[in-house]
Length: 201
Ligand code: HEM
Image (cartoon, rainbow, N blue to C red):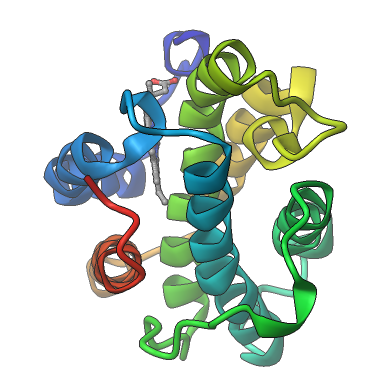
Protein backbone atom coordinates (compact mmCIF):
# COMPACT_ATOMS: atom_id res chain seq x y z
CA UNK A 1 0.00 0.00 0.00
CA UNK A 2 1.01 3.61 -0.27
CA UNK A 3 2.09 4.04 3.32
CA UNK A 4 5.25 2.02 2.86
CA UNK A 5 6.08 3.45 -0.56
CA UNK A 6 6.15 6.98 0.83
CA UNK A 7 8.45 6.13 3.73
CA UNK A 8 11.65 7.82 2.74
CA UNK A 9 13.89 6.55 5.48
CA UNK A 10 13.33 3.24 7.25
CA UNK A 11 14.83 3.56 10.73
CA UNK A 12 16.78 0.57 12.10
CA UNK A 13 14.15 -0.16 14.74
CA UNK A 14 11.51 -0.50 12.03
CA UNK A 15 13.74 -2.80 10.02
CA UNK A 16 14.13 -4.94 13.16
CA UNK A 17 10.39 -4.89 13.85
CA UNK A 18 9.59 -6.00 10.33
CA UNK A 19 12.17 -8.76 10.39
CA UNK A 20 11.02 -9.88 13.84
CA UNK A 21 7.26 -9.96 13.25
CA UNK A 22 6.62 -10.53 9.54
CA UNK A 23 6.11 -14.28 9.99
CA UNK A 24 3.72 -13.78 12.88
CA UNK A 25 1.74 -11.30 10.81
CA UNK A 26 1.42 -13.71 7.91
CA UNK A 27 0.38 -16.56 10.22
CA UNK A 28 -2.27 -14.49 11.98
CA UNK A 29 -3.59 -12.94 8.78
CA UNK A 30 -4.18 -16.44 7.39
CA UNK A 31 -6.23 -17.47 10.42
CA UNK A 32 -8.42 -14.38 10.71
CA UNK A 33 -11.88 -15.01 9.25
CA UNK A 34 -12.50 -11.65 7.53
CA UNK A 35 -12.45 -13.32 4.11
CA UNK A 36 -14.11 -16.57 5.19
CA UNK A 37 -17.29 -17.65 3.40
CA UNK A 38 -18.82 -18.48 6.76
CA UNK A 39 -18.37 -14.95 8.14
CA UNK A 40 -21.86 -13.63 8.77
CA UNK A 41 -23.03 -10.81 11.05
CA UNK A 42 -23.10 -13.08 14.08
CA UNK A 43 -19.55 -14.30 13.48
CA UNK A 44 -18.33 -10.75 12.85
CA UNK A 45 -19.84 -9.65 16.16
CA UNK A 46 -18.06 -12.51 17.94
CA UNK A 47 -14.81 -11.53 16.26
CA UNK A 48 -15.18 -7.91 17.30
CA UNK A 49 -15.99 -8.99 20.86
CA UNK A 50 -12.74 -10.90 20.86
CA UNK A 51 -10.87 -7.86 19.47
CA UNK A 52 -12.37 -5.71 22.21
CA UNK A 53 -11.39 -8.31 24.80
CA UNK A 54 -7.77 -7.79 23.80
CA UNK A 55 -7.60 -4.09 22.95
CA UNK A 56 -9.46 -2.90 26.04
CA UNK A 57 -7.16 -4.41 28.70
CA UNK A 58 -4.05 -3.83 26.59
CA UNK A 59 -4.79 -0.14 26.11
CA UNK A 60 -5.67 0.16 29.81
CA UNK A 61 -2.34 -1.47 30.66
CA UNK A 62 -0.53 1.01 28.39
CA UNK A 63 -2.31 3.90 30.09
CA UNK A 64 -1.61 2.55 33.59
CA UNK A 65 1.99 1.58 32.87
CA UNK A 66 3.52 5.00 33.53
CA UNK A 67 5.94 4.02 30.75
CA UNK A 68 4.39 5.87 27.80
CA UNK A 69 6.88 8.54 26.70
CA UNK A 70 5.68 11.98 27.87
CA UNK A 71 5.70 13.39 24.33
CA UNK A 72 3.56 10.57 22.87
CA UNK A 73 -0.17 11.24 22.46
CA UNK A 74 -1.67 7.88 23.34
CA UNK A 75 -5.23 9.08 23.93
CA UNK A 76 -5.79 10.08 20.31
CA UNK A 77 -4.73 6.57 19.25
CA UNK A 78 -6.93 4.53 21.64
CA UNK A 79 -9.20 2.14 19.78
CA UNK A 80 -11.19 0.29 22.46
CA UNK A 81 -13.85 3.07 22.71
CA UNK A 82 -14.53 2.71 18.96
CA UNK A 83 -14.73 -1.07 19.28
CA UNK A 84 -17.18 -0.62 22.12
CA UNK A 85 -19.37 1.64 19.97
CA UNK A 86 -19.21 -0.91 17.14
CA UNK A 87 -20.32 -3.66 19.50
CA UNK A 88 -23.19 -1.54 20.69
CA UNK A 89 -24.21 -0.87 17.05
CA UNK A 90 -24.01 -4.61 16.38
CA UNK A 91 -26.37 -5.21 19.29
CA UNK A 92 -23.83 -6.92 21.55
CA UNK A 93 -24.56 -6.83 25.25
CA UNK A 94 -21.98 -4.55 26.90
CA UNK A 95 -22.01 -6.24 30.29
CA UNK A 96 -20.38 -9.54 29.57
CA UNK A 97 -17.30 -9.11 27.40
CA UNK A 98 -14.48 -11.43 28.39
CA UNK A 99 -11.15 -9.68 28.69
CA UNK A 100 -7.71 -11.11 27.99
CA UNK A 101 -5.41 -11.34 31.00
CA UNK A 102 -2.34 -12.77 29.29
CA UNK A 103 -0.87 -9.51 28.04
CA UNK A 104 2.64 -8.46 27.11
CA UNK A 105 4.64 -6.94 30.00
CA UNK A 106 4.67 -3.16 29.67
CA UNK A 107 7.58 -2.09 31.82
CA UNK A 108 9.50 0.38 29.69
CA UNK A 109 9.07 2.96 26.95
CA UNK A 110 10.57 0.39 24.55
CA UNK A 111 7.88 -2.13 25.48
CA UNK A 112 5.16 0.50 24.94
CA UNK A 113 6.50 1.27 21.49
CA UNK A 114 6.63 -2.40 20.53
CA UNK A 115 2.99 -2.89 21.54
CA UNK A 116 2.01 0.31 19.75
CA UNK A 117 3.77 -0.76 16.56
CA UNK A 118 1.39 -3.74 16.38
CA UNK A 119 -1.76 -1.78 17.23
CA UNK A 120 -0.90 1.06 14.85
CA UNK A 121 0.23 -1.23 12.04
CA UNK A 122 -3.07 -3.08 12.24
CA UNK A 123 -4.83 0.06 10.99
CA UNK A 124 -3.11 -0.44 7.62
CA UNK A 125 -4.64 -3.87 7.07
CA UNK A 126 -7.88 -2.36 8.35
CA UNK A 127 -8.17 -0.48 5.08
CA UNK A 128 -8.43 -3.76 3.19
CA UNK A 129 -10.71 -5.34 5.77
CA UNK A 130 -12.99 -2.31 5.79
CA UNK A 131 -13.75 -2.76 2.07
CA UNK A 132 -14.31 -6.49 2.47
CA UNK A 133 -16.72 -6.07 5.38
CA UNK A 134 -18.58 -3.24 3.64
CA UNK A 135 -19.12 -5.46 0.58
CA UNK A 136 -19.78 -8.68 2.43
CA UNK A 137 -21.86 -7.52 5.40
CA UNK A 138 -22.87 -3.96 4.45
CA UNK A 139 -21.22 -2.64 7.59
CA UNK A 140 -19.42 0.68 7.83
CA UNK A 141 -18.52 3.44 10.24
CA UNK A 142 -22.11 3.96 11.44
CA UNK A 143 -23.36 0.44 11.91
CA UNK A 144 -20.62 -1.64 13.50
CA UNK A 145 -17.36 -1.45 11.55
CA UNK A 146 -15.86 1.93 12.49
CA UNK A 147 -12.85 0.17 14.03
CA UNK A 148 -11.71 -1.12 10.65
CA UNK A 149 -11.46 2.46 9.36
CA UNK A 150 -10.58 4.11 12.62
CA UNK A 151 -8.29 6.80 11.17
CA UNK A 152 -10.16 7.11 7.89
CA UNK A 153 -8.35 9.23 5.29
CA UNK A 154 -5.64 9.98 7.89
CA UNK A 155 -4.52 6.31 8.08
CA UNK A 156 -1.37 6.73 5.99
CA UNK A 157 -0.40 10.00 7.59
CA UNK A 158 -0.88 8.71 11.12
CA UNK A 159 1.21 5.64 10.34
CA UNK A 160 3.99 7.79 8.94
CA UNK A 161 3.78 10.06 12.01
CA UNK A 162 4.13 7.02 14.25
CA UNK A 163 7.10 5.69 12.29
CA UNK A 164 8.72 9.11 12.36
CA UNK A 165 8.25 9.25 16.11
CA UNK A 166 9.68 5.76 16.52
CA UNK A 167 12.67 6.60 14.34
CA UNK A 168 13.35 9.89 16.09
CA UNK A 169 13.85 8.30 19.51
CA UNK A 170 17.45 7.58 20.35
CA UNK A 171 17.67 3.83 20.94
CA UNK A 172 20.57 1.51 21.61
CA UNK A 173 20.64 -2.12 20.48
CA UNK A 174 19.18 -3.38 23.80
CA UNK A 175 16.24 -1.04 23.55
CA UNK A 176 15.62 -2.00 19.95
CA UNK A 177 15.58 -5.60 21.06
CA UNK A 178 13.04 -4.75 23.79
CA UNK A 179 10.80 -3.03 21.23
CA UNK A 180 10.87 -6.07 18.95
CA UNK A 181 10.32 -8.50 21.86
CA UNK A 182 7.22 -6.55 22.95
CA UNK A 183 5.85 -6.48 19.40
CA UNK A 184 6.49 -10.21 19.06
CA UNK A 185 4.72 -10.95 22.35
CA UNK A 186 1.81 -8.72 21.37
CA UNK A 187 1.25 -10.68 18.17
CA UNK A 188 1.48 -14.03 19.94
CA UNK A 189 -0.73 -12.98 22.89
CA UNK A 190 -3.33 -11.70 20.44
CA UNK A 191 -3.31 -14.90 18.41
CA UNK A 192 -3.55 -17.06 21.54
CA UNK A 193 -6.41 -14.94 22.84
CA UNK A 194 -8.33 -15.08 19.56
CA UNK A 195 -7.81 -18.83 19.50
CA UNK A 196 -9.15 -19.16 23.05
CA UNK A 197 -12.22 -17.19 21.95
CA UNK A 198 -12.69 -19.62 19.04
CA UNK A 199 -12.85 -16.94 16.37
CA UNK A 200 -9.92 -18.05 14.20
CA UNK A 201 -10.20 -20.18 11.09
C1 HEM B 1 -6.69 -10.37 7.63
C2 HEM B 1 -6.16 -9.45 8.38
C3 HEM B 1 -5.04 -8.52 7.95
C4 HEM B 1 -4.68 -8.09 6.73
C5 HEM B 1 -5.32 -8.43 5.39
C6 HEM B 1 -3.54 -7.23 6.90
C7 HEM B 1 -2.89 -6.57 5.88
C8 HEM B 1 -1.83 -5.73 6.04
C9 HEM B 1 -1.18 -5.01 4.97
C10 HEM B 1 -1.56 -5.08 3.50
C11 HEM B 1 -0.17 -4.31 5.51
C12 HEM B 1 0.86 -3.50 4.77
C13 HEM B 1 0.49 -2.10 4.63
C14 HEM B 1 1.59 -1.31 3.94
O1 HEM B 1 2.60 -1.87 3.53
O2 HEM B 1 1.42 -0.12 3.85
C15 HEM B 1 -0.19 -4.55 6.93
C16 HEM B 1 0.70 -4.01 7.81
C17 HEM B 1 0.72 -4.29 9.16
N1 HEM B 1 -0.20 -5.05 9.86
FE1 HEM B 1 -1.65 -6.14 9.03
N2 HEM B 1 -3.24 -7.15 8.22
C18 HEM B 1 -4.13 -7.91 8.90
C19 HEM B 1 -4.21 -8.09 10.26
C20 HEM B 1 -3.34 -7.53 11.16
C21 HEM B 1 -3.44 -7.69 12.58
C22 HEM B 1 -4.55 -8.45 13.30
C23 HEM B 1 -2.39 -7.04 13.13
C24 HEM B 1 -2.01 -6.87 14.56
C25 HEM B 1 -2.85 -6.93 15.57
C26 HEM B 1 -1.62 -6.45 12.04
C27 HEM B 1 -0.49 -5.71 12.18
C28 HEM B 1 0.19 -5.08 11.17
C29 HEM B 1 1.40 -4.32 11.34
C30 HEM B 1 2.17 -4.11 12.63
C31 HEM B 1 1.73 -3.82 10.08
C32 HEM B 1 2.89 -2.88 9.75
C33 HEM B 1 4.02 -3.61 9.06
C34 HEM B 1 5.08 -2.60 8.66
O3 HEM B 1 4.95 -2.00 7.60
O4 HEM B 1 6.02 -2.43 9.43
N3 HEM B 1 -2.23 -6.77 10.87
N4 HEM B 1 -1.21 -5.43 7.22
